[in-house]
Image 1 (cartoon, rainbow, N blue to C red):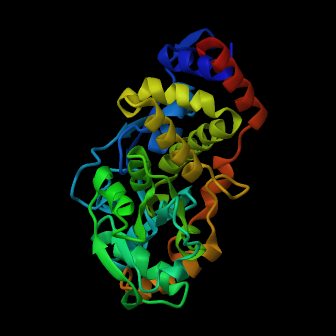
Image 2: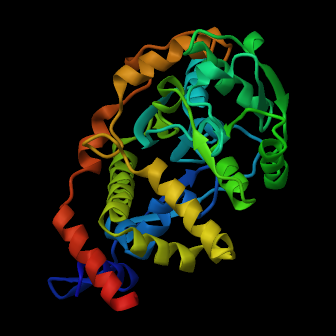
Image 3: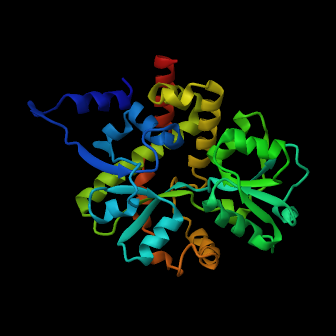
Length: 345
């Protein structure tokens, strides 16, 4: 019997040690992230389906994600053991005195960027000078500013206008040629394409080459909790690797776990493909902390008012959990994925 199934059964029953039944100890990890179970963060649903969290003795309890309260507050008050924050949230929280540590980069590429119509002759953000650029919402203005700044331009070199979040409206902006480009993020590109308009991304590296989301814990987490978080991150890493081994298995698990995202199968697949592109680490160690990038992104964030001050890496980056998060056998995961495919597909 493959290991994930075996560990799942053990978690559900009891282990026999020296003739005595001993219940397996399960630690609940309270986590908060922008979405509940979703293909957008497929390592969670894949890790649950393949038994990786159970194998680590971890039960993931997702806290409500629709709260208007900043996620970092849940870390500070002890309600959450781990939270998913973007770089701006991390740095703003540190400036506000929060004792938090980034322990894992969930997405090592930013989901936000600059898109153009697939038929556009534009090839670079520098060519947007004098053009009208759409914003999905006001929050995308910073993305546009940083992208223009990377090419020696300012927001005064373009005309920006808020287009809105509706897919048909975004698609119409390209179709009617009212905008030359749109600043937004991954779901916006999918919404545009779902309405029949192909797009191309011209996002400068200064925008895209940064963590999109991170896992953050309290700097005061005790050793027992840190051990449980190690298990959580190890399970997440293994489940992430499944997308490299067999993305069709990931799709099958997602269709079962979150069928509402697959009512339109084509959109569901595109949504997952985008999630895989963003979630699979680009570093050798999955989730590794890219210290140079963290320092490189801060001057532009400060320049455009996202953060007030630059924070030294040692004040918020904690790489001590990266090695444990990668301490597992890839060949074993590959065998488990093959077994799951044989049993379920």
